[in-house]
Image 1: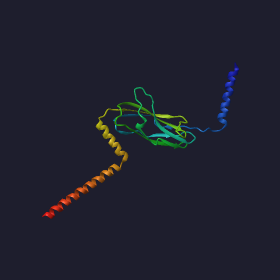
Image 2: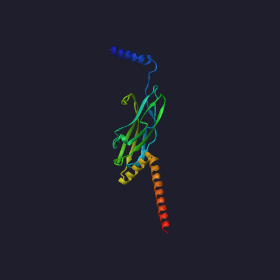
Image 3: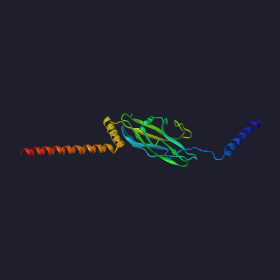
Image 4: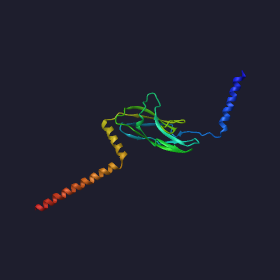
Length: 201
């Protein structure tokens, strides 16, 4: 009856010895500073909404590559939004031991976004080389929000505003150039008409 207990004791001692014989073991870890983000504002299709900045840290003792991606928390009563709705800058980065990275998070809702309640995880994890296979633990921030119905006109107006923000200041410069050109042509035409009238007199 003592054999199984003795065997387990010996195995435990061997495991402890193997864990300490090689000295400190390289450890890969990950942490985030936000546990949950609940957007109280009711969102509208076509709009862009900036979420709080997410800080990802490496509490381990080895450097590595990290990524943030959108996953489904499978929350009852809430739909999972498409990953394409989220803009993560940067979505992938390298962290030294003890270092951290701020990730800007924005929610871009398409014009045809379905109204309703949504939930998503912003999952941070260390990844390996190649196709980004996860190589360690993962932590996640839960994001919840509601989309309210909106008219097509309002949705397209918000999308146009969002597009202008993306390419700023080029649309504003182009509009200013057109305005100056139009004003120049108008003044030139008025001068021509005036000169013609004066000559006829």
